[in-house]
Length: 62
Picture: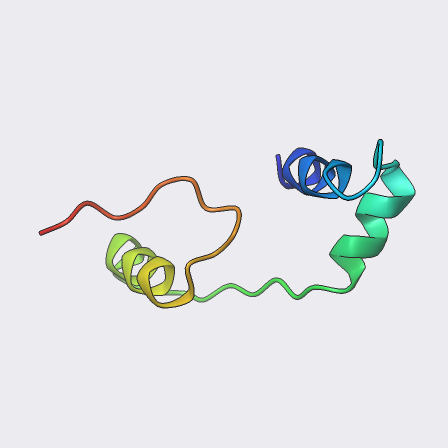
């Protein structure tokens, strides 16, 4: 899924992103994870704070 989303992002910059273009873009970025007892709360806090480009689900207002 991430590969597809990055490809769409890069397609806007050039005609068609190749697998090599996508791999190069991903290699320049960092992926992290965190163990938690409250995954939904942690995700909501991170999404609100970081506004990640590829996140399609925004937390519901309280």
